[in-house]
Image (cartoon, rainbow, N blue to C red; front, side):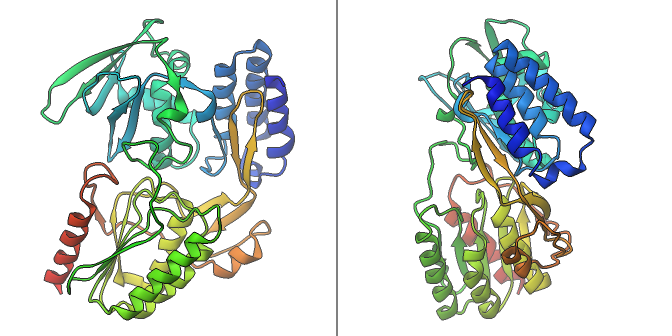
Length: 393
C-alpha cells in the first residue's frame, strides 16, 4: 500500500458521495488534491497527513475530517482546551512538566499558532479548539506552520495556577504514539484513556432536585444504552423534583434516537426548570438531545456552560474509512441535519427527518466554565446549581 492509494480512496469514495463537499469550489478541491498527491509521491507520511487534513477540512463540517491520531508520533504532552485556554494536563514517558496554561510554543504566542492552523482543522471554532491541540505537539506540523526555530528542540512556555512561568524544553525526537495522549473521540479529561463507567448516573439531592450525568451516547453493543436510558426515565418519573439538572459535558455523541424515552420522561415529569450543562466537548447526538429538549421545554430549559462543539446545522451519519498506508482514519458524512429550522433535504434519512424540530439558535443562558470541563467534584457542582435554582424559586 502507498500513500497515493490512500489519497485515491479519499478521492473516489469520499469526495463524490459526501454532500458537504457540494458547496466547495471544485478548483479549491483540485488544488488541495494536488498538494496531497505531491506529498504522497514524496513519501512523507507527516506531510501527506497534514495536506489530507487540509483537504477534508474544506467543508467546515466537523463530521468530515481526517483523524490522524493512530498514525502520528507526538511530543509527550497532553494538551486540552479548557475555556479560552489550552492547559497542559498530563505527560508520558515520565516527562517532568508543570501543569498549567500553555502560553507560547518556541516563543510564539499561542493565538498566532492557532490562527495559522485554522485551515487544517474541520468544524466550528469550538471543535477546532478541541481537535487542534494535537498540532501543538506534532513536530512536523509546527515546522510546516513556521513555528519550529530549532529542528532538534521544542520549547513550551507554561503558566501554573500561581502565575509562575516555566519554559519546558523537549527534544524533538522524544516522541510517543499520539494515541497514548489524544483519543479519537476527544472528551477533555486529563486522563486520555478515560472511558465512561456507565451511560447515566442519577443523584437525588434531597428536595433540591435530581441530577443526571450523561457522559456518552455511544454504545457499540447497542444494548447497554437503551437499558440505561429506560432506567433513568423510570427514576425521573417516580421521583418528582422541583428542578432537574443534566450534565452533558464531555458527551461526544452517539445515537440520539435511543435517548428519546428519557426526553419524554423529562418533559412530562419536570415540575420546575431543567438545567443542562454543556461544553466544547459536547458533540453531535448530545447536541441533538439538547435541541429537542429546548424545542419541547422552551424557556424552562436553562443552558449553562460554554458553546458546544457543533452547531445545529451540519452533515453527519456516514462512518469511518481506514487509510491502510498511513494508518489514519477519515470520518465522512452522508446526511444533512438542520436542527435550527427543522428542515430536511434529500440526504436526510427518514428516521432522522421524523424527529427534526426547529430548535432555533440554542444560545447559552449563562456562560460558565468550572475548571477542567469534566474533571473535579461534579457532585458539588450539581448541588450548587440546584441550590441556586431552589433559591430563585
